[in-house]
Length: 440
Image (cartoon, rainbow, N blue to C red; front, side):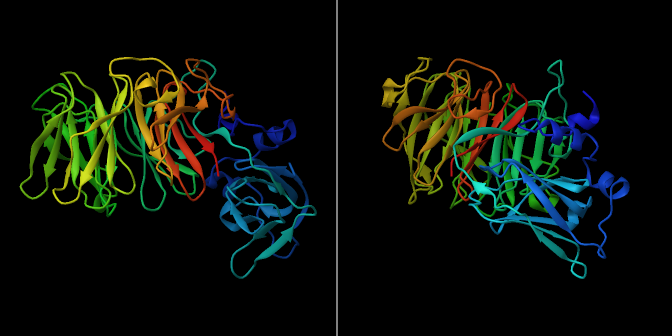
């Protein structure tokens, strides 16, 4: 695959757009050094847009004159809502339609404070909403190979996308299993690596911020009772390095309560839940949920009133109430799925079936959207325990964007939800991509 083609998004470009962007530089450096400068003495004009209708993440081309190729000087608004500018070659701008844009005029503003000009497209953009699965970032070559590549989001690559978390600015933090910690900025334009594995951290498994978003708990899966269990990275270091916090316990997952910051984690070898005492700096076992070799993680609802304990290798989910008086998670109850019974079945409570449930995300109504790894789909669990298939084709792996039940995933592992945009982000591990599900 040529470098110029590799930096292009892969979804829905017309042939004309594809040819155009082969000649567009894909980084800010190349657009400013090799592109066409904006001329404040000449008018900015728009001749046409294509397509003239679509939904969130539609790839919109704006054709005209005197845009310049420095994207830092270009702003695009659809019905008054800012649209991310991906690239420009001076006569064409490539943008993504933002969520909930609505129908209205397309406006381009070019220049700095003293040289600003604007132009309005001759036709309005008609916003159409339909839930769909798309690809935000990541690609493989013709042989299915990829690498850890930082940079503009249309050039970035991933190897083992695994667990996701938002910070308070809606930046995305991504664990790559066996690889390290990656970062996608809130504008969804750049990907960077914060640190790589090594020096005692070999298999990072889960992420959880404290309530102030200045400390990030990172669990580390290891078989050694004297090995690293939980590490922390801090805002003071820009989360670029970690320090040891807890040793032993063969941990698969941990989470901080979103209001109090109480931190809980598991022990795979004993099936136990522990609470970390931040003052005494010791861990205390609360209870055991199962037998030995119980792989599970802890995931709090945004309210902090309860947590789901997702038992990955035994295919079921428990629910535990958080006691604000004691600061502890109470003994959980079996909520959904069949203990030690893998499969795919929609249903209610323990009649439903999962096959390696993993990370989930809560919406504003406490519905829980769960990555069902070996079923290659996303499941929805209501607060009442009704389980349904939300996206993907059960037991049918692959890579395909499209309508919710037409799309395909391959071992989806991580998921987070942005309520403001109605968008889920999914770490699609074997496809080596970050996918999006737009719901609005």
